[in-house]
Structure formats: structure tokens, C-alpha cells
Amino acid sequence: MKVGFIGLGIMGKPMAKHLAAAGLELAVYDVNPAAVEALTAAGAKAAASPAEIGGSCGVIFLSLPNGDIVQQVLFGPDGVASAAQAGTIVCDTSSVTPGQSQACFQRLAEQGVAFVDAPVSGGEPGAIDGTLAFMAGGRQADFDALRPYFERMGASAVLVGDSGSGSVAKLANQVIVNLTIAAVGEAFVLSTKAGADPWKVFEAIRGGLAGSAVLEAKLPMMASRNFKAGGSITVNRKDIKNALDAGYQLDVPMPLSSQLFAIQQALKVEGRLGEDHSAYVKFFERLAGVEVRGEPREVQP
Image 1 (cartoon, rainbow, N blue to C red):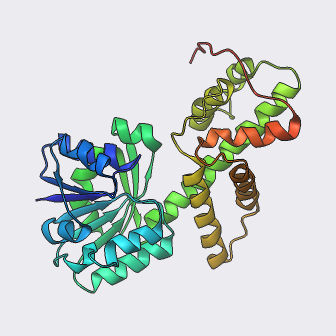
Image 2 (tube, helix red, strand yellow):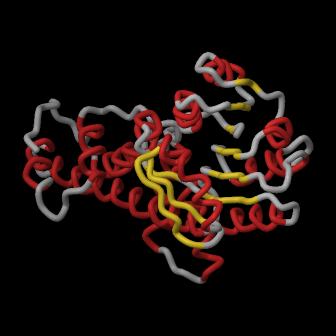
């Protein structure tokens, strides 16, 4: 079966490369010609439009910046839905709101096209390594049909529930990850202000209850002043806003996430949206007048 992939950005390009490496007949589309060229060099075929992919591919993956762009790619002029045939499966790996996913499911179902929302966790490193975690919402049969592709691009895939459930799981993931990064930043600014070596503090606490994948990944970036984006503040700010919007619609108070969004807004004013979300530490550093910094060293696991 011919497979389509639309959106070859930080996440989509390496994901599509895994499909191409598997020997699948792959058609790709992106507004960035250089991204398309990188995939054609890996064996994929370039498509002229989303509609071309919609009319020629039985399985179509999307990896796009936001829900509005997803809607445009699917339902706009020359969009996927304008040419997709009944029986096609569209899988959206973008981070959007549950309501946006459900709207796509319902509109595509009217023409016999299946839709699965399957956002991912693992960031750019996971996309490159093929270790992403897919969290899906949709029908069991459609999820089962997509599983072989998930296995090419990731390490795990879970059907959370009906349409929109994958997007719900993604929002929960992003709330936990981003609040934990902010907590790590605040805690290590406190440690630094008190005169403690951040690497020694890291070594002391990483084996206890404070230990986490977030701590392991982000404290070294903070202390070595490496803020090259693996997960940019831009993307995570959008996700936290989506979480707050969902909370508003569901009457769920989210005071911690609201505070985090205010921190993200402050960093936006400082021009830091392109930095990794480990740069949340800079907000706390500016308030405290210190900088978390230490010489990188090997820390025993």
C-alpha cells in the first residue's frame, strides 16, 4: 500500500525517513522544498499537493505545527479530503486539541475516510532514533492497521480510547513534562543561589523520588548552557495553551499550567521562543540574579 506523509519538520522528517528506510512506497509533501529533497534522496517520491497524496495513498500521516494547519491541509482547497477515497486512513501525529481531532474524525467519516489522532512523546531525539511513544485515539481496527507503521517509527503505541483520546493523553504528557522542567529550573536556581554545585546536587537527588527522565535530560542542558532546541518553547507554549483551552471547555481549573504559560509568555517577550524548554531556568535566574552553571562531568548511574 502506498503511504503518504505530509509535514517534514523537526519531527516529521525523521519519522518519514524511517518509513522510507523500511522500503515502503512513500509519497511526501511539505512547503519547504529542502525538506522534500531530503526525503526524495532517501527514496520517497515528491507529491505536488496534499490532494495528490489524498488521491493516491491508502495511509496518510500528518506532522504539522498546529490544528489550524491540520484543518487547512485536510479540508482546504486542494486538501487531502478533496481526493481521498473511502477506506483511506489518515493519522495525525500533530499536537492539537481533542476537539480539533474529533472534528477531523467526524468530517472525514462522512466520506468513509478513517481518522486516528496519534500525537507522540519523545521529541526530536526519539523521532531520529525511532523510539517515539504514540498515544492514539480512534477505532480499534484503524489503530491495528496503523500499528506496523508505528513500529517503524517508534518504540510503543497505545490506543487510549475513542477519537480525541490521543490528543488528551498528549496534553496530559505535556503538562507533566513542562511543569517538571520548570520545577527543575526553580530548584537548581535555589541550589545555585545557596552556593551548591549543581552537578553535585544532581548526583545527590537523581537516585531518589526526585529522579526522572526530565531531570536526567534537562539539568545537564541547563548547567552546560546548552539550549539548542530539542523541544522548543514555541511548540510547548502552544501545547500548554491547548491544555488550558481544554481545561476551560471542561471546567477544569489548571492554576499550575496557567502560571507556566505566564512564564512562557515572559520568555517570548525576551525572544527565547526558539530555545529548548530547558531555558525555563532563565526565567528563575533573572528573578534571583544567578545563573545555573557547572563544568560537565561524568555522573555515575
